[in-house]
Image 1 (cartoon, rainbow, N blue to C red):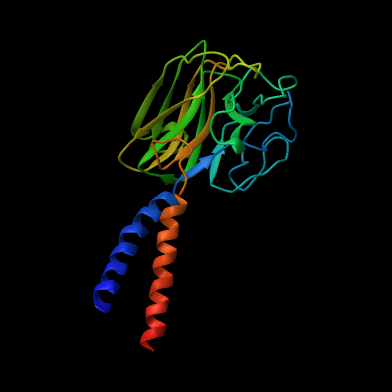
Image 2: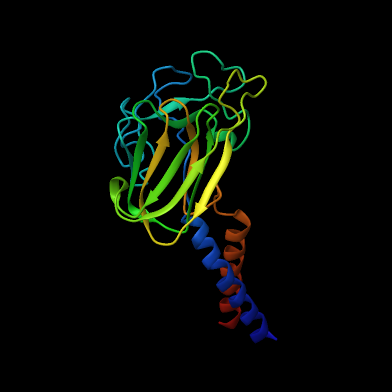
Length: 234
């Protein structure tokens, strides 16, 4: 009986660990706190905010090893009660409440590039709003939009306006893609000032996906159970 319980416990942990590991590898860029104040109309260039450095306004975030071209900026997103001194863009109260003040857009040219030197696999996703002009997103296995093209997403225009948020670019919609290989850069294409992104997610075709607490809990309970069995054996 004890052997059967132990085998079942090992099986549960073996099943949960790969899932927890895969989910833990998912990285989400929420573009919060890049602008040095909120609300603001003075948008920061993202630059090395997610790469161990700073934005153009001297702010810094978690070092994920992700860098942006100079035309990539952090737009101020309207929230309830904050419709002036910000922008014409909002999440409209949808999505993670901790990711509703900042987004990604570009202000010059017809594209901007994001590099992830360490690379990411499996999938890529985000939320976006583009009410006048669509856009496209391309995933490459080389830096600076070079090498093999692993995936392309063509972005259609989205619905406009969310009541109470004073924003035409609202709500955001989800987009994502799975691919084979290791990606190291992403090109965001479209018309400058006409498409906004948020919750950029590496490692999943579902934007904003994070490790499931329940799965991690199963792993924890399994390890506790193993420890108890060893103590009883002693």
